[in-house]
Image 1: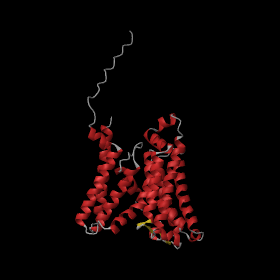
Image 2: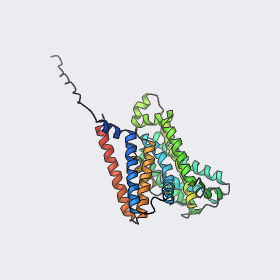
Image 3: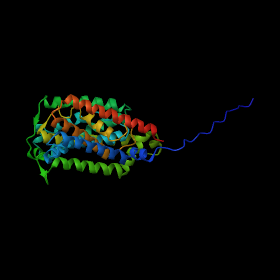
Length: 334
């Protein structure tokens, strides 16, 4: 008896699709506009509830507070768009700050301190990348192990004490102002500008989106997925090194307690900025707007003398809502 196969029924095309408004809101520009609207709403709340919110000094305080976590967020954005995750950024920054502020390192001057911070950050990122790319270990586990190891190393080197920054050049970074704006904010803006060009105007950025969207397809297309994965984690580590110098200057100390929970703040900013946790889609501008949203919320709570616990609850609710919106957008996308 000849093999009889049932012919597959014709696939019915769904009439219509997402509305024009839905398509705009699902685009990168639409998500960024939504975050700008949230920022404006927070500013309205701030002006209504605190007399000092709209002052120049308070706005500069918000930007300065956002600068360090913002630099870390730039690196985390690259990693997540590339399909990975980096939980170690906070403690890698702490380790870099401790290593760069030892008495021996400071005796060689500010440039050696900067080099040490960048080298420690890049080295930690290199280890993460090698274990993930060639060890085939899940990024969550590798970076969690790096977080714990970096914390232990930082405590071991510093003997659990804060190391005072005595170098005047490093200490002066946080107090220097150009046209009335802290130098830390300029460093933050420079890192964002370089990151934006790298992500949106170079082959490296296009490969990051391709590997995050479908690593197997990227490999078949001839991309060296393993080498690119390593480069992404090294980039994240370099951002931690830059942030280490910034926080050492701002606090005039290198300490193992720096960067606690920074990884969660950075990942949360990336998520509410519209970057998919599964990789392949996201914008650096969205992540930076996410940082500004969280920093402004923190500032509002401080000005209104509200408890830290309430602040953390509000942040948690925002993260959940952002993930729900992402999930809904993924399901509705064609």
